[in-house]
Image: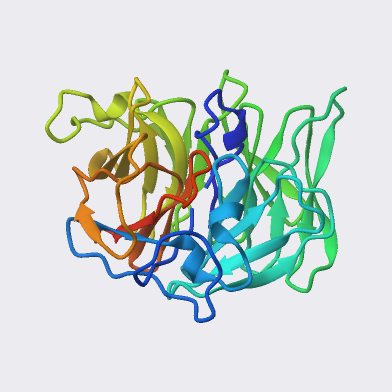
Length: 346
């Protein structure tokens, strides 16, 4: 349904782009397993740690899903899609189902930038294009259809990055170009929003078609409902047990929420910890907090969501009834476990 664009543009490498996961059945590390595990079932108020690498006997997910190296997006089916763009020729788009089954979705036969990707309702995958040096105008986005054929989607000509954000229920594709957000459908482009800043930190499209865009922290979120004027959200509240305003958190990665609104993986000002925040309307709920230097969680175990010592992950995504946190910020051996928690009920 949507993905956050261009995580690699941030000054911190761990402020990446997207989210998918799996579960572990009692062992740590990222080796391949003959019988892949499924996703864990977290208890309310806890995060369930699991070995992402145990979800596939084909892909080394602990190596392929890393901060800055991976494109992550979700679809209305609850599936999570991911692609390791860094250094791979003819990379596979991988699909993870809500049961934690990971397999090949389609192979890509064109260049992939560290921008974003969107899986559309017809099964095709649209990829972003980052401006080249010297800059040239971008006039189309590369598309891989569900059978692996390469086509292109015409977009408004731009000298900025052209990044797909998500698809609305009417089938229009929302893209960002510099400070502009566009809806593109059947060769027609409609500008949804313009801002003076030339880049969005992140943007997503929720199942109702509302676009949420951000330029820095949670104090600067614009919501664009279908058929209505854009409005700024006014997120209030503080982190549990602290005086830190939720609105001051710096956005790392966004993902659409199945019940409307979005999830934000956001860093505190000192970049010592991250919070998982669910935003619906102007209401924000902190679902979990993790320290950036945490490395003491064991796959197969569960920990209090707001006080765990589990390491911060790079990407967030909802898959079925679970919110998944995946992708180590830096390489560890064995890899820090991925995390799953219950998705809130709207």
